[in-house]
Amino acid sequence: MKKVRTYNTIATIGLEQFPRDSYEVASEITHPDAIVLRSHNLLNEVFPETLQCIARAGAGTNNVPVQRCSEQGIVVFNTPGANANAVKELVLAGLLLSSRGIVQGMNYIRGMQGELDDSALAKEMEAQKKRFKGTELAGKTLGVVGLGAIGSLVANMAISLGMKVAGFDPAISIEAAWRLSSEVEKMDNLSSLLSRSDFVSLHVPAIDATHHLINKDSLASARPGVVILNFAREQIVDVDAIVTAMEQGKVGKYVTDFPVQALLHNENAILMPHIGASTREAEENCAVMAANQVREFLEHGNIRNSVNFPPADLPRTTDFRLTFTNENVSGVLGNVLSILADASLNVVDMLNKSRENLAYNILDLEETPSQAVLDKIQSVEHVVNVRVL
Image (cartoon, rainbow, N blue to C red; front, side, top):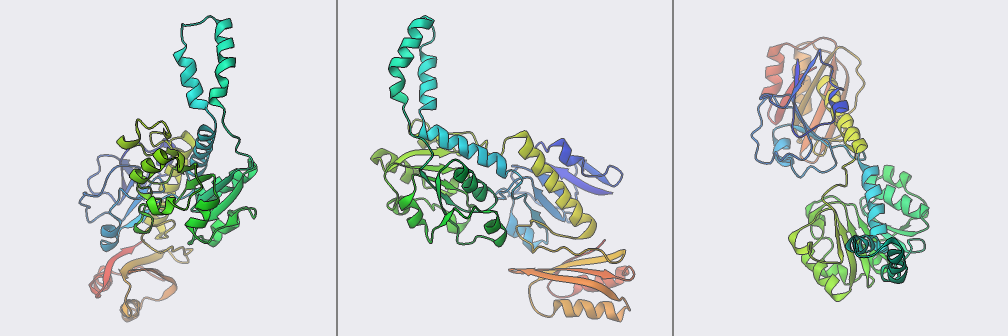
């Protein structure tokens, strides 16, 4: 019986992916094989030796100690793209809210409650509506920073709205490039994108290279009155620089899913309570994707959408599968194969993949290895862990 511990509320449809006859799924399990979570903070958690993988039902893994997991041979999954449409639609809302006087107009109307009869109210609204005049999105330029699962959807959406789109992503994947409209103009750097954009939407992860990507220096290249939309991560924007830029008129509005105290009373800040992925569909998509990735790994050793292990997908050719993780140094795989050969265990098929300091191996054998063989493999220098599936 495999054991999965859950944190937060995971959509029922996701939990239903685990067959009840072979999985125990609960929030009280103390020695799980896997963890499935959303935003719960695991940074200070001590993991049991039984833990083999962690699946984050969402894109960001800032709440998971990824480096420590790598050292312990724990695979960390995320679910890229599962909440992409939800975030895309909220970006659209942000574009509309920042270009039209929607919120201001609604607040003004609310403030007229009980003061005028319907006829007088209609006349007042007609007289005052010029105060809330905005601009249309069509014909404006949207700069998209980061053209992954979400960024490419945002770019294509903007094209369909009649906007011009400039995109910047130095690490764009081939898969993302295929998803992207040919009408998106590729920028060579952030400065070029900022200088020609009326709106800029950010869709990059929070890593060292993107910390305060939007700051005083980068904003110097921006078109006056630019609208910055941040539905990615709080850390990629220097809030103090944004506040100063709004005071100077350099930034027209800042739309974000990450409110902080410095923005609460700024009339040019449009703040949302971190609801980018808060739709029923997104939560269900993330839960199902996370659960299926956990099952595929626990049952077959295959790895899809890991943030710390290499992708590894090998169709089964026998009933006896061995996997092992090792530090990415030469000679380890050869030593393991020698142990199997000495035990007369034939390897029918195998896969060896590496990512930075880690290597991961899947070997299909003609028969199951004994515990003595497994102990020998585990004792090989630089081997982190061994499993038989």
